[in-house]
Each structure stands twice: as C-alpha cells, then as structure tokens.
Length: 190
Image (cartoon, rainbow, N blue to C red; front, side, top):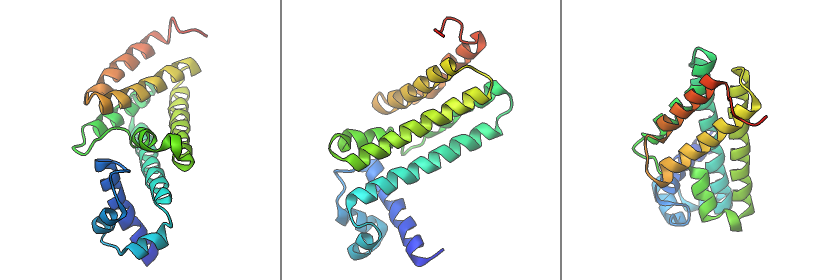
C-alpha cells in the first residue's frame, strides 16, 4: 500500500468517525485534520473539496455494508435463513455502541436537497441496496413481490432504529419477514 493510499485510509477512518458521530455540517476541516492527524494541505491534496470527502465516506461505507451483508447471507444455510440473514446483519449494526442511524439518510437530510453529489451517492446506495435485497430474495426462490416487501422492511427498520432509537427494529422486522415467507406472500397483489 502506498503512502497516499495509507493516508487516504487514515483520513477516511477519521472522517467516518467524525461525520457519523457529529454530523457532516457540524464537522469542520480543522476538526477532521485533528482527528486524522494529517496536515490540512495533505487532506486537500487527497480530496480537493469537502464534497469529495463526503462522497468518499459514503461510498466506502456503502461498499463495506454491501460486502458485510453478502458475507452474512453466504454463511447462512436454508433459503429462508439466507433472507433472514439480512436482518441479522442489521440487528448487529443497530446494537453497535456508535450506531447513529443511516449515514445516507443523515447525509441526505443535511445536504442532499442542495448537494447533487451527495444526493447522487444516496440514490446509488439505495438502488444498490434494493438490488442486493431483491437478488437475495429471488435467489432464495421467492417472488419479486416478496422482495419488494422485504426491501421496505429493511428500509423501515433502519429508519425506525435511527429515528426512534429502537434497537430491536431489525428483530421485529425479521418476525414479519418470517411470517411473510411462511405464507409465501399470500394476499400480496401480483
């Protein structure tokens, strides 16, 4: 790993901690510099603008989340367990001491309506997450309609955990998914 790559990782580690804990607008570049232990000049060499830093933070977080979900699903056994593994991942995330809600929702709430780059990154995350959930559900042998409902339960549990501080939101959604899978989606419009 090159020095630039190492510093980039060091900076993004610090940015993730500061942005996620305090909010993007509340964090200034001096605070990020102190947290990363890098000179401000080096930070601007790595990321010429705060917007680029925000997008890199969101993209890195997205890549990690998608990989973690896929690994959890791959380790599960039966088709039903593979679908439920999504909620096992979410439950672990919600119970992390540093959990402060959805970073993409938080970023969009702070900047999305006025920042095209952030809005695009949030859209990218949501589309990719929905595609991943849909693929997992379809690969498990369930219908696209069930996949749509499960995605909404994923999104709803993330929002509920973040806004209402309901750390059991994923477990509650998991119960609903288990019932939905048991009925094969009976009653869903086709």
